[in-house]
Length: 106
Image (cartoon, rainbow, N blue to C red; front, top):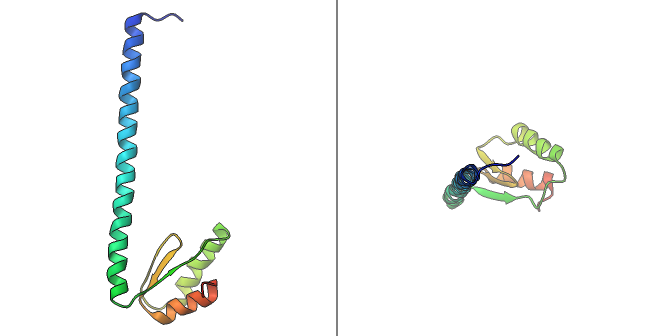
């Protein structure tokens, strides 16, 4: 199909505007993700100052392991705890130590 120069120019402007919108959405999403990470780090730093114990797993071997860990925590940890990916924080040091022993982070 042959398009007139005017149509082609309008299409070019439309594509540029869509690219700009997409770029802004990506920037906003990344900024929100970064802000959540910063907020979590500040909160967890405060919890650590209140004697909570932080444990970082080196890696997961599989998605099944991540599910197993979550089930184990729910069954065995009796005190408050938080999780973000491979990063965990426990209110009770015994919970943290049992976690380390069970999941090999000692």
